[in-house]
Length: 173
Image 1 (tube, rainbow, N blue to C red):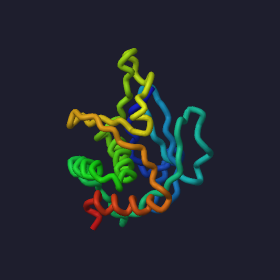
Image 2: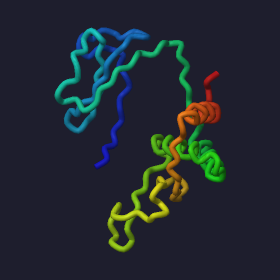
Image 3: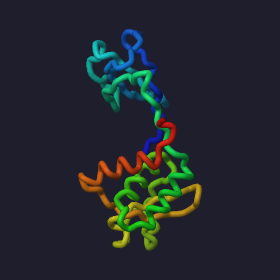
Image 4: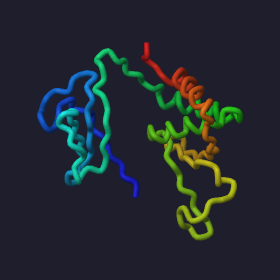
């Protein structure tokens, strides 16, 4: 079962002491289920004693400095145009795969579960041609895509990260 929920932004206040959390300060965040809602609580380093029994996720982070610039990704239409361009470039399959994962994360594309046409059941069998492909669906275009699963090498990871950052970010200046 896939759960879909929104994680709240940090309140920048310690849930235990109600003290404001300052820029650059390490804090711990925890997610808990309260009724039908997922609730986020943030704790200062001093007040953190580990996650509660009811926590299903927790992480450590740092309160951002006020001078940190927010980088906005390009609009979804621009991302889909780049997606189309990379689909036509066999030497860029690893970047196409990484962009596909980004688009799934942004909910522009969604993972599609293959259906065995003989039984009508989802996920029963997968054609050999899709064994190493990610099948995604674009609701906006009403189109399904097969993207080869091509994990970038260690040396390509940094190159892809720099290329995508340069192509996809706006407002960084």
